[in-house]
Image (cartoon, rainbow over all chains, first blue to last red):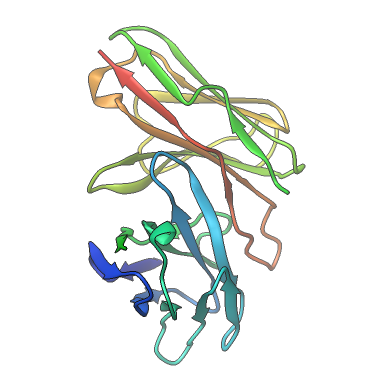
Length: 113
Length: 115
Protein backbone atom coordinates (compact mmCIF):
# COMPACT_ATOMS: atom_id res chain seq x y z
CA UNK A 1 0.00 0.00 0.00
CA UNK A 2 0.87 3.66 0.05
CA UNK A 3 3.00 5.20 2.76
CA UNK A 4 4.61 8.55 3.56
CA UNK A 5 7.64 9.03 5.80
CA UNK A 6 8.45 12.46 7.12
CA UNK A 7 11.49 13.71 8.92
CA UNK A 8 10.91 13.58 12.63
CA UNK A 9 10.45 16.75 14.56
CA UNK A 10 10.29 18.97 16.29
CA UNK A 11 12.41 21.36 14.26
CA UNK A 12 13.50 24.66 15.82
CA UNK A 13 15.07 27.40 13.71
CA UNK A 14 15.97 31.04 14.04
CA UNK A 15 14.23 33.61 11.88
CA UNK A 16 15.71 33.85 8.34
CA UNK A 17 17.22 30.35 8.53
CA UNK A 18 16.89 27.86 5.67
CA UNK A 19 14.27 25.17 6.11
CA UNK A 20 14.18 21.63 4.77
CA UNK A 21 11.61 19.05 5.85
CA UNK A 22 12.23 15.68 4.25
CA UNK A 23 9.42 13.55 2.84
CA UNK A 24 9.72 10.21 1.06
CA UNK A 25 6.91 8.04 -0.17
CA UNK A 26 6.00 4.57 -1.33
CA UNK A 27 3.25 4.22 -3.91
CA UNK A 28 2.32 2.37 -7.06
CA UNK A 29 2.46 4.35 -10.27
CA UNK A 30 2.40 8.13 -10.24
CA UNK A 31 0.69 9.58 -7.19
CA UNK A 32 -0.07 13.24 -6.59
CA UNK A 33 1.89 14.78 -3.74
CA UNK A 34 0.87 17.50 -1.30
CA UNK A 35 2.15 19.57 1.57
CA UNK A 36 -0.35 20.77 4.14
CA UNK A 37 0.21 23.22 7.00
CA UNK A 38 -1.67 23.34 10.29
CA UNK A 39 -1.46 26.45 12.47
CA UNK A 40 -2.23 26.07 16.19
CA UNK A 41 -5.87 25.29 16.87
CA UNK A 42 -6.84 25.22 13.18
CA UNK A 43 -7.55 22.76 10.41
CA UNK A 44 -5.13 21.79 7.64
CA UNK A 45 -4.49 24.17 4.76
CA UNK A 46 -3.11 23.07 1.42
CA UNK A 47 0.33 24.67 1.06
CA UNK A 48 1.42 23.30 -2.32
CA UNK A 49 1.05 20.32 -4.61
CA UNK A 50 2.66 18.48 -7.54
CA UNK A 51 0.90 16.02 -9.78
CA UNK A 52 3.68 14.56 -11.94
CA UNK A 53 7.39 13.83 -11.85
CA UNK A 54 9.69 16.88 -11.89
CA UNK A 55 6.81 19.25 -11.12
CA UNK A 56 7.69 21.95 -8.62
CA UNK A 57 4.97 23.17 -6.31
CA UNK A 58 5.42 26.58 -4.72
CA UNK A 59 3.49 28.93 -2.46
CA UNK A 60 4.32 31.64 0.12
CA UNK A 61 8.07 31.12 -0.42
CA UNK A 62 7.85 27.35 0.12
CA UNK A 63 8.86 24.94 -2.63
CA UNK A 64 8.90 21.19 -3.18
CA UNK A 65 9.92 19.17 -6.24
CA UNK A 66 8.40 15.80 -7.14
CA UNK A 67 11.37 13.47 -7.56
CA UNK A 68 10.31 10.12 -8.98
CA UNK A 69 13.83 8.66 -8.97
CA UNK A 70 14.28 9.20 -5.23
CA UNK A 71 10.54 8.99 -4.36
CA UNK A 72 10.85 12.26 -2.47
CA UNK A 73 9.00 15.55 -2.07
CA UNK A 74 11.11 17.61 0.33
CA UNK A 75 9.75 20.96 1.52
CA UNK A 76 12.12 23.95 1.45
CA UNK A 77 12.04 27.62 2.28
CA UNK A 78 14.95 29.97 1.96
CA UNK A 79 14.21 32.26 4.89
CA UNK A 80 11.68 31.28 7.53
CA UNK A 81 9.63 33.70 9.62
CA UNK A 82 8.13 33.42 13.08
CA UNK A 83 4.71 33.19 11.39
CA UNK A 84 5.78 29.93 9.69
CA UNK A 85 5.66 28.14 13.05
CA UNK A 86 3.17 25.32 12.49
CA UNK A 87 2.89 21.59 11.85
CA UNK A 88 3.64 20.48 8.29
CA UNK A 89 2.18 17.32 6.76
CA UNK A 90 3.31 15.56 3.60
CA UNK A 91 0.58 13.53 1.87
CA UNK A 92 -0.11 11.57 -1.29
CA UNK A 93 -3.06 10.34 -3.28
CA UNK A 94 -2.61 7.54 -5.77
CA UNK A 95 -3.99 4.68 -7.80
CA UNK A 96 -4.46 2.29 -4.93
CA UNK A 97 -6.14 4.84 -2.69
CA UNK A 98 -8.38 6.75 -5.07
CA UNK A 99 -9.63 9.83 -3.30
CA UNK A 100 -8.08 8.93 0.04
CA UNK A 101 -5.00 10.76 1.25
CA UNK A 102 -2.11 9.01 2.95
CA UNK A 103 -0.46 11.38 5.44
CA UNK A 104 2.93 11.50 7.03
CA UNK A 105 3.12 11.92 10.79
CA UNK A 106 3.65 15.68 10.64
CA UNK A 107 6.65 17.83 11.54
CA UNK A 108 6.36 20.56 14.16
CA UNK A 109 8.31 23.68 13.17
CA UNK A 110 9.08 26.44 15.65
CA UNK A 111 10.77 29.62 14.42
CA UNK A 112 12.30 31.87 17.06
CA UNK A 113 12.87 35.61 16.57
CA UNK B 1 -12.11 30.02 -2.50
CA UNK B 2 -13.22 26.64 -1.26
CA UNK B 3 -14.99 26.86 2.02
CA UNK B 4 -15.52 23.95 4.40
CA UNK B 5 -17.31 24.88 7.59
CA UNK B 6 -17.90 22.87 10.74
CA UNK B 7 -20.77 23.53 13.10
CA UNK B 8 -18.74 24.09 16.25
CA UNK B 9 -15.12 24.91 17.07
CA UNK B 10 -15.41 23.61 20.64
CA UNK B 11 -17.88 21.14 22.11
CA UNK B 12 -18.19 19.60 25.56
CA UNK B 13 -20.44 16.56 26.00
CA UNK B 14 -21.14 14.01 28.68
CA UNK B 15 -20.43 10.29 28.47
CA UNK B 16 -23.33 8.45 26.85
CA UNK B 17 -24.74 11.46 24.98
CA UNK B 18 -25.47 11.28 21.27
CA UNK B 19 -23.28 13.83 19.49
CA UNK B 20 -23.70 15.32 16.02
CA UNK B 21 -20.85 17.04 14.20
CA UNK B 22 -21.89 18.86 11.04
CA UNK B 23 -19.79 19.77 8.03
CA UNK B 24 -20.80 21.83 5.00
CA UNK B 25 -18.82 22.54 1.82
CA UNK B 26 -19.66 25.04 -0.90
CA UNK B 27 -17.61 23.73 -3.84
CA UNK B 28 -19.93 21.02 -5.15
CA UNK B 29 -17.36 18.36 -4.19
CA UNK B 30 -18.40 14.75 -4.57
CA UNK B 31 -16.19 13.43 -1.78
CA UNK B 32 -16.35 14.26 1.90
CA UNK B 33 -14.26 12.90 4.76
CA UNK B 34 -14.15 12.79 8.55
CA UNK B 35 -10.83 12.47 10.41
CA UNK B 36 -9.79 12.56 13.99
CA UNK B 37 -6.45 13.94 15.07
CA UNK B 38 -4.71 12.93 18.28
CA UNK B 39 -1.19 13.74 19.53
CA UNK B 40 1.27 11.10 18.44
CA UNK B 41 -1.28 9.33 16.22
CA UNK B 42 -1.53 11.79 13.35
CA UNK B 43 -4.69 11.99 11.25
CA UNK B 44 -6.89 8.93 11.08
CA UNK B 45 -9.76 8.51 8.65
CA UNK B 46 -13.07 7.63 10.30
CA UNK B 47 -15.50 7.58 7.35
CA UNK B 48 -15.80 9.03 3.90
CA UNK B 49 -18.54 9.52 1.37
CA UNK B 50 -18.20 9.68 -2.40
CA UNK B 51 -21.82 10.53 -3.16
CA UNK B 52 -25.10 11.38 -1.51
CA UNK B 53 -26.27 8.53 0.71
CA UNK B 54 -23.04 6.63 0.05
CA UNK B 55 -20.44 5.98 2.72
CA UNK B 56 -17.37 3.89 3.29
CA UNK B 57 -15.56 2.98 6.46
CA UNK B 58 -12.16 4.43 7.02
CA UNK B 59 -9.51 3.13 9.36
CA UNK B 60 -11.29 3.68 12.69
CA UNK B 61 -15.10 3.60 12.19
CA UNK B 62 -15.98 1.89 15.49
CA UNK B 63 -18.24 4.00 17.67
CA UNK B 64 -19.14 6.37 14.83
CA UNK B 65 -21.71 6.62 12.08
CA UNK B 66 -22.26 9.16 9.31
CA UNK B 67 -25.04 10.65 7.27
CA UNK B 68 -25.01 12.35 3.89
CA UNK B 69 -28.48 13.36 2.78
CA UNK B 70 -27.35 16.32 0.66
CA UNK B 71 -24.24 16.73 -1.44
CA UNK B 72 -22.92 19.68 0.52
CA UNK B 73 -23.43 18.27 4.02
CA UNK B 74 -21.75 15.40 5.84
CA UNK B 75 -22.54 14.59 9.45
CA UNK B 76 -20.54 12.54 11.93
CA UNK B 77 -22.53 10.91 14.72
CA UNK B 78 -21.21 9.55 17.97
CA UNK B 79 -24.00 7.22 19.03
CA UNK B 80 -22.94 7.12 22.68
CA UNK B 81 -20.01 9.37 23.42
CA UNK B 82 -17.15 7.99 25.46
CA UNK B 83 -14.11 9.67 26.98
CA UNK B 84 -11.79 8.00 24.45
CA UNK B 85 -13.57 9.96 21.74
CA UNK B 86 -12.20 13.21 23.12
CA UNK B 87 -10.27 14.52 20.13
CA UNK B 88 -9.98 17.09 17.34
CA UNK B 89 -12.34 16.21 14.50
CA UNK B 90 -11.58 17.45 11.00
CA UNK B 91 -13.87 17.42 8.00
CA UNK B 92 -12.57 17.61 4.43
CA UNK B 93 -13.92 17.55 0.89
CA UNK B 94 -12.57 16.99 -2.63
CA UNK B 95 -13.54 16.33 -6.21
CA UNK B 96 -13.87 12.71 -7.22
CA UNK B 97 -10.82 10.97 -8.69
CA UNK B 98 -11.20 10.18 -12.36
CA UNK B 99 -7.67 9.66 -13.60
CA UNK B 100 -6.55 12.63 -11.52
CA UNK B 101 -5.93 12.83 -7.81
CA UNK B 102 -7.34 15.90 -6.18
CA UNK B 103 -6.35 17.68 -3.01
CA UNK B 104 -8.67 17.73 -0.04
CA UNK B 105 -9.86 20.95 1.56
CA UNK B 106 -10.25 20.98 5.32
CA UNK B 107 -12.55 22.71 7.74
CA UNK B 108 -11.27 24.48 10.88
CA UNK B 109 -11.89 21.47 13.13
CA UNK B 110 -14.08 20.74 16.14
CA UNK B 111 -12.36 20.09 19.43
CA UNK B 112 -14.65 17.68 21.27
CA UNK B 113 -14.26 16.95 24.96
CA UNK B 114 -16.27 14.10 26.48
CA UNK B 115 -16.46 14.18 30.28
